[in-house]
View 1 (cartoon, rainbow, N blue to C red):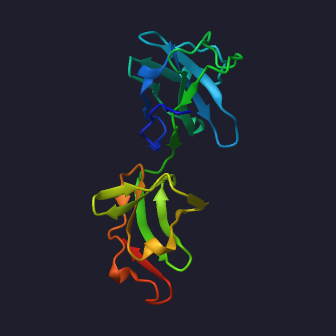
View 2 (cartoon, rainbow, N blue to C red):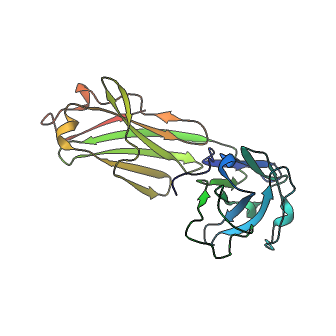
View 3 (cartoon, rainbow, N blue to C red):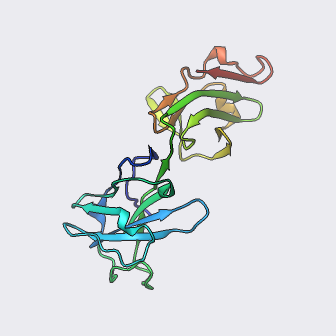
Length: 242
């Protein structure tokens, strides 16, 4: 999938009885229909509805909660809405479409030719809860020079979903390293991102880790510098804590 639909919200948190709306941008590249799906933790994707530009949503999929959902669409965006959320609405919600020029009769489950291209959004996870907090307690960064990797740890947050971004600071500005080789480790109440780095560059480069969270972006307060420990200057690791 060379192109994706845009779902900027990583997570949304609502208390029971509140309303929620999931947005989907970039639909100007789609054909006639936008589809919306629900994905619960232990279940597969379930189609909720599809909607054409300027039209009303169509619900042929017999989703058990289909009456709880409504949708809108214009040329460049679409939204899925729930007027009053319940605990069992907790799930991830995805938009998808056939890219313009593809041939389809409007149903995802039909066999299509190799020339058809299906594109998805990245999804938004809905938390329905009695809690009322959007909190990222701390973010710390550890630099392991001898091993050739950097670790960024986010802990004590609700909701627990986060998205890590790595950047290196160069003379001509910042370079995004998000597409480089990374590994994420998830445990209860904390998530870590590990970035593999050329050990020869660790002594001369400066790195920055930031976290996208529903409560807002959070960034490690300092970047790598002399005080963070050069190779040979201690036990091989250092930590900056916010």
